[in-house]
Each structure stands twice: as C-alpha cells, then as structure tokens.
Length: 429
Image 1: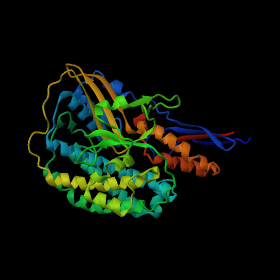
Image 2: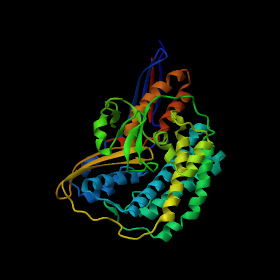
Image 3: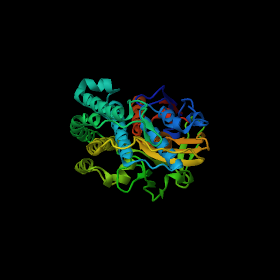
Image 4: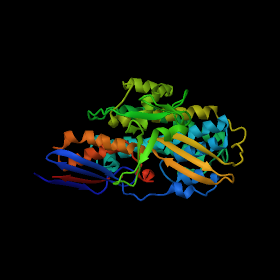
C-alpha cells in the first residue's frame, strides 16, 4: 500500500481562505472535505437590536465585491415587512446599480481569477505578459461597473445611497448620461470577451444537478419574482425555508445548504441562464445563439462563458435604464415602523442571496437570517470534486492541485461571505 500526501496551504484567486482534504487509498478517492476555516463573522447577531434603517449599510459590509446584493436583498425584505411599494424610478435605479455590480464582479472573475486557469498561467500578472490587451480590457470593464455603482450609490465599495424605501438622493440625469458613450463601447468589448472565453478548452464534465434561480415574468432576474428550479420547484421567496435548509458540517465554519427533499443544488450564472435564457436582452440573447450554447448547460467549467453573456446583458440593460431615466419625484417612500416580518432575495453575481427579518413595534430588528450564495453552492462544489477527481488520480501532484483549484473557481466562491476557502491536503495511503 503506497502513501501519497499533497498539501496546498491556500488556493489563490478566490475571495477568502479554506482548505481541501483528500484521502486516497489504493488509487481510490475515499474521503473529500472542503475545510472552510475563516472565523464566523456574526452579521446576523450584529443586526439584532439595531434600527431597521441601519440594516442596508451593515449588510453591505458582508462583501466588498457584491455589497449591492446584500443591500437590495435586505431592503426588499424590510420593504415587504412594512408594506412599502417603491416607485418605478427607484426600482429601475436599483436594477442599474445591480448591473454595475454584475459588471465589476464578472469582469474581475473572467479576466483576473478564472481565465488564467484555462490559459495555463499562475495568475493574471503572468497572463498579462502574453495577453496584455485582454487584461487591460477586463480592467476597463470593471472600472465601468464601479462607475455605475459610484454614480447611483455614492461610492463603488459599500455604497451609501440605498435605503429602505428607495434612495437618499436621486442621481442627476447628466451624471448618468456621461457614462453612455463608454457603455456603448463596452458592449462591443464584452461581446468580444464572450467570443474569447468560448474558445477556451473545457474539460468534458457534465454532472447532473438541480438549478435554482429567481424567475421574473418579464425580466432577466436581478430581484423580484419566485424561486424556481429545473426540477419543477416554483415558490415565493417567503417559502424558502420550507424547501431549503442549512446544515452544519464539522469540517467547515460555513453552513451547507440543501433542498429538504432533493439534496444538493446549484445557484449562480448557469442556473440563471438555464432557467431564464429567453429573458436576456436582445444582444445577449443573439450572442448566446451565435456561440451555439445549448438550452441547458451542465458543465460548470462553462460558467465563464455565461458570466460573459451576463456582462453583455448588464451593459445593455444599463443603457436602457439610463435612456429612460428621469429624476422626478421623491427619492424614497415614507413608512412607519411596525411589528412585522419580511423576506427578500436577489441574484448576486454568484447566485441567490436570501434574507429574512423580524421587526418590533419600535423598528428594531428582532431576528435576522442571511443565506449567501456561496454557502448554497458549497455542497455542489464538493459533489463536483467527488465526480471530477477519480479519473484524474494518476496525475502528478501539481496537475491534480491545479485541476481541483480550477473546479472550485468555476463557482467564483466568496468564502468569507459564506462563513456565518484553499488549503489542499491530500492523504494517499
């Protein structure tokens, strides 16, 4: 019996820290654990006893890459509790700032975190030596997403303009119009990105899974709508806890989410695309057709292509909203605190971000529960690795490590968000 041990202290190009332990005996994979060892961050506990008006600013600190997801999930949950109906202009502005977040997050992942895997580079710095134009393009696209967030949200990281009921102030139309020329150029650039990543070499890997995403009757989902799945699930956001549960794993400080009756599921770009393809904007939909993308994608390595398609969508949707924007009326809807509870959910770049709050008569938070997208994908990542690794056990340690890291980066995990990722330790016996 031979023993082979492989240990990687950290996996690069993901947000956060964690580890992967593999146990291999007689060329058989017998144990696999994603060890997430970042300390719990206690955001839900921090919120209890706080005024409801503080929630959007506090929850935005959960993530510096996708603060809008946490802000909009929180404000829509609190607005549902208080019976607040925001104006159409506020709703459109929220879609616009969410598009900004998708653009900056997807551009970062596409060019800096995931493309090096497919092209054989250790990182984007090394990749830039041979692909300088692609890296520069990625930085331009990310900058534009940040600019949208700054104009609408007040700043690009942890924006400060969103509030329960709307915004503290409405941006000037002239400020948004200054972005239009760059946004039009960026659509062409983002289409080129999609054509570029579609040429990458994708492993033949087609695991079956249940895909879960928001479904809106008329729009590609950012927020609002029911939660649906490829297995026929169709529920309101308020019924999430009846169908999904979080379970504690002894090797992880992050909870793992599962369907109560169906087990592992997947959220994120592929799930959104598979369930909402017909709702894409015209150029994004035409690009998906040009690239001959099938109606259903199972290969998680192709998530990089879908992120590129969604970037085209986000630019196109941003231009539509800016063209129709007129800053008339009040920036927010007034309300009176009352004892109530509400639920909210939005599509963060990595998948659905679900919030639940209970409020007392004085407007203080009595209960808060937040389920981020990465914790919902962790069980799916582990399942992918169980299926992906066995045919590759004869690879060298370096190559096996590389393949495992790439399989994890398919999901662009935001590990510190999930700790309510990678050190690799392989034990071959």
